[in-house]
Figure 1 (cartoon, rainbow, N blue to C red):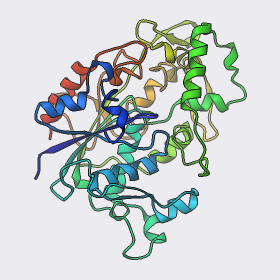
Figure 2 (cartoon, one colour; figure 1 turned 90 degrees about the horizontal axis):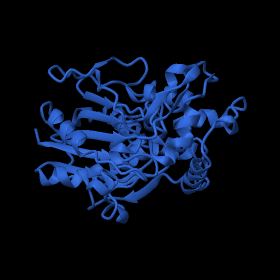
Figure 3 (spheres, one colour; figure 1 turned 180 degrees about the vertical axis):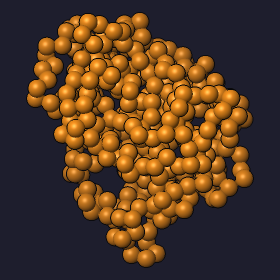
Figure 4 (cartoon, rainbow, N blue to C red; figure 1 turned 60 degrees about the vertical axis):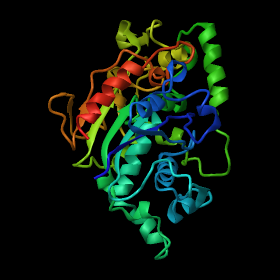
Length: 359
């Protein structure tokens, strides 16, 4: 077997080493220094993938696979027809992200935010393929990703502040019973929130409205996606959740200004007080109020219903979600912060040591 290859997958509106801006502004670590480059300097095979900033988990998983295998992106015949976009995307032939792609490959996949959803779905496809794509595709034209049988190439999955069970940040915006204007937020933070929304607004391109990350992160849709993704028995699963809020009266949580980036104060305040029930019956109560500014802490620990246990560093088990203690940090911690600069390198160094003890 080959040495482990560490592949980092960014979150919503992020970027990786295929993107020109990564050199000046690395997604992993930000101004504190490129975490991925630091791991390479320490002798590890570590790489930062570049997937669609706002694409669906499916599209991003297909793009990540193409970068690893060094092939043209194939979104699948069934998927591309159903979601109204081209079947094929960028060609990574001769530009593979990692040194080799074969049965000796041993992937350690590390995903921040929606990158955590992306890597889980790709691992599922590698293992079990897609029956829909197999049925819709002519013999000889099926992407190996949709054929499956490559699950053993993934040895560990790490999710960092991932909306594994969705985030109420999207549900509350669609709930007519929730009046966001009544949530008390300083004017400066409201203005910053509007700035973020303008910068991150989806640029519609004709594809189906269900083929975006924002759709996948609605609670009911995240649960439907989780039902398609199994916990692979041979894979080590690690997760880190973040909480940058403080308790307030009535079960509400408010941003901890010492930790919460000003860009997230408004969204955190809304998440911290929103309650309701989804169409599929998911009850959003006080347990959903702690958050990191963008994602509910309860959603970041492990998929609901999946086998899970608190992380025991002396007994990390495969086929089980080994859940780290919640970090007192906001959603941007792993990227080095935005307006509030932070240094996440101590966390990543500890994570590296933990992973090397497993793989």
